[in-house]
Length: 475
Ligand code: 4AD
Ligand code: MG
Image 1 (cartoon, rainbow, N blue to C red):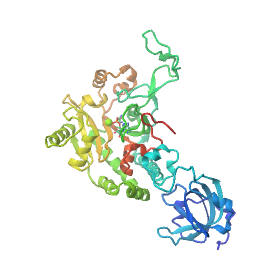
Image 2: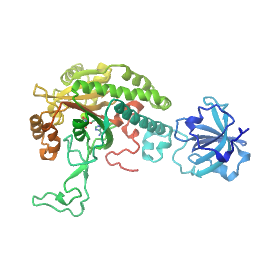
Image 3: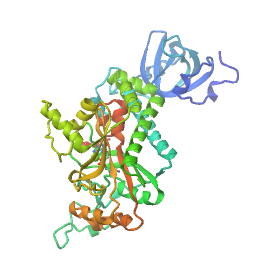
Image 4: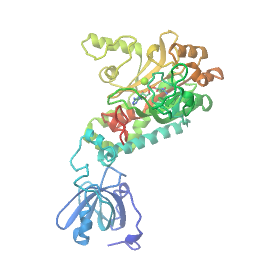
C-alpha cells in the first residue's frame, strides 16, 4: 500500500490546495487543519478538513475500528488535527483525492456544544459578532484570500510600472483633507489636562510637543516623494472619525495612493483606469474558486460585472454635465433623497444613478466645484472648478478620489488660507512649490471599496478582518 521509502513518521505537511491536484495515489501524505464537518456510519467516518489554503476541503476517511475511541470522540467540528495517511482516489463526485487516515493527532479539541460555527449557514450579521472565528467559514476564507491577492496585485502593478512604495506616517500633525475628521493621538492625562494662558490645552506637554492625530491620507507626504522619486505609491491604513454608519464607510480603512510627477489629469485618469482593470483581472485570473463560491452564495452576476469593467472603457464626464443628467432625471420624475443642483456634493445615490441607470458603465467625473473639494487641487481657469476626478463604480459609488495638484505656490497658499488650512502647519508641503515645483497628479483608492466590488459583498464590514466603525472596536 505504501510506496517504498515512505514511512509515516517522516512525512512533511502538505497544503490541501496542492493535495487536491495530485494523482499519485498510494503515497503517504500529511495534512494539518480544522475539522469542518464529520459524518459517517458505524464503520467509517468522513471528515471534511480545511487548512485555509483553498475553499475546498479534503475528505479524510477514518476506519473507526483502527482508532482509539477517546480520540474519535474528539474529532468534532472546529477541532484542529494532524492526519497522516495515504492519498487515495476519491469515489466522491467533484474531488479527485481523499486521504485514508493511518494516524491522527488532535492538537486542539473544540466543544461542539459551545462552538459557535455550526454546519448550518449563519447570517453575515451574526458572523460579525464573532469576527474572531469568522475566518474559519468558507465565506471569510474566500474573502481574506482575495484580499491578500488584491494587495499583491497592487504592489505588482506599481512595481512593474516603475513606482516606488513609499511609507507615509500614520501619526501626523496635519489634516490632509481639511475635513476635521481626525482621531487625536495623545499621552496626556485626560483626567488632568493642563491649560495654556488662552484656556486651550497645553500640547507642549504632550508626547510630540504638539497636537497630533492619525492620518486621513498619505497624500501630502506622497507628493513630497513624487517630487524626488518621480512616481510613488503609498498603501496603508488611514483613519476617519466621520460618524457615517453606512455599508461603505469604515473609521479605519486601507488606502492606495499613487502620486506621479509630470502627470496631468488625463494621465491620472488613464492610470486609474488601467490600475483598477489590472486588479480586477488579477482577481479573475487567480481567485476563480473563491469568486465562484461567493458568486454562488451572494451574487450571481459577480463574474459578469467584473468582466464588464475589465472589457469596457470608463465614461469621462465633467461634473457640470453630470449635474445636467441628474437634473433631467429629477425632471422626469426620478426621486433622490438628497437635492441636486450645481454645487451640491454628490451622494452615493447620485453617483450610482449615473453609473447604473444612465451610462451603465464606470464613470470618471471631473472638474468639481472648488468649494466641495480639498485645498490642494489644481484650480481651473474658470475660477469655479478644480481638476478633481472621482471614479464611480456600480454598486459602490466613489471608489477612487484624486486630482491634478495645484503646483503654483501663490495659488495654493491663497486657497489653503481661504479654506482655513493653517499654512504654518504645512510649510513643508508648500516648500515643494517653492523649490522645483512641477505639474503632478495622484489619487486614492479605497482598498475595501475595491474589495466590495471584487467580492460582490454588500457591506464593507465584511471585507476587512476586524472592522472599526462608530461604537465598534472589538477584537
Ligand atoms: O476621496 P478621498 O477622501 O481622497 C483622499 O483622501 C485623497 N487624499 C486621495 C489622493 O488623492 N491621494 O478618499 C479616497 C478614497 C475614496 O474614493 C474611497 O474609496 C476611500 O478612499 N474612502 C473610504 N473607504 C472606506 N471608508 C471611508 N470612511 C472612506 N473614506 C474614503
Ligand atoms: Mg472623495
